[in-house]
Amino acid sequence: VFDINDFNTFEDILAGLDDFVARCPSGASCTLEDIGNSPQGRPIRLLKITKPGTRKIVWFDSAIHAREWLAPATNLKLLDAIISQQDSNAVSLFNKYDFYFVIVMNPDGYVYSWQDFTTRFWRKNRSPNVGSSCVGTDLNRNYDANWLNDGTSTNPCSDTYGGSSAASEVETQAVQNYLRNIGSNIISLTTIHTTAQMILIPYGHTDANGECAYPSDHQDQLAAANAFADGIENTFGTSWDRGTVCTTIYPASGATMDFAYDTAGIKYSFTPELRGPGFDPPASAIQPSFDEVWNGVVDLMAQIETLE
Ligand code: 0X9
Ligand code: ZN
Figure: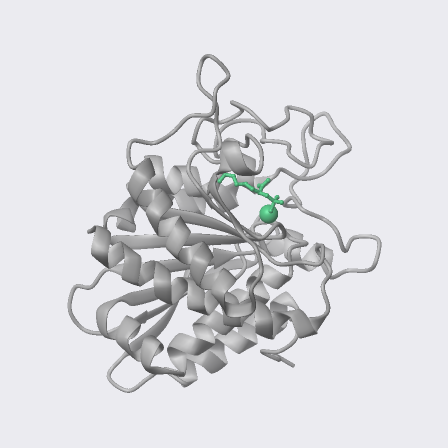
């Protein structure tokens, strides 16, 4: 049974999405769209919460890394906040923007992380690799964004295996195609990970000299990331780093966020690394994670408005 205050199986999340659709705010449309299917045939399901007219889209996705369970749990609470119009911030955000949520970007990996305690910390998808007995590609190294440049592996047994070619994986292709089509309508994209207490911005790759690369929009992106991280910190007095992937966590190329910025043209693209502890926090971490991220999102959107 779906429980917004607990971790949920893939099946329960799909049922939960149906419940959200049934609770659509009056005057709004809530629609499900499968942007693709995983190799094992599971939907990559998008929930769109929209109002009539042409409005910019705020995008949140999660669980591209299977084991990072607090990410989809927190994302579901963000979805709940918008659907229930929980407070005046939720109301004013939804007065301005449409909201798109993909809760599970890596369905096969997520299901596998629920199988038993030996598979709980699985990260990649579950596609077989030709010529290897090791399974899976790191979908957050498989995007057509400086693919294989840095912080990624050509070894199929590695947890950061980039795949056999850029966008070799159908999960990657589905998201890339979708973002290519609607990217110009997206005002901000947040692709949620755990667990390092950071707000990361592009880029993850390095240049020809091995130095971290910076986008031309860096100053605006950093101002937005600072608002996001400050809003989070102010909630419980925690400490969150902010900065480019390459300078703040480590070089890592071929990720969703860098594709979103470089190819889909989404200037404000973020990778939060949520609170821990680790990849297996207790369910009691879900509410405080949501509380702080929600405050961060409210401040982020206000900051983006002053920058645009
Ligand atoms: O390594 C990753 O993919 C992310 N960290 S995690 O511990 N969740 O695995 C950070 C990657 C962010 N990279 C780019 N957006 N380039
Ligand atoms: Zn991750």
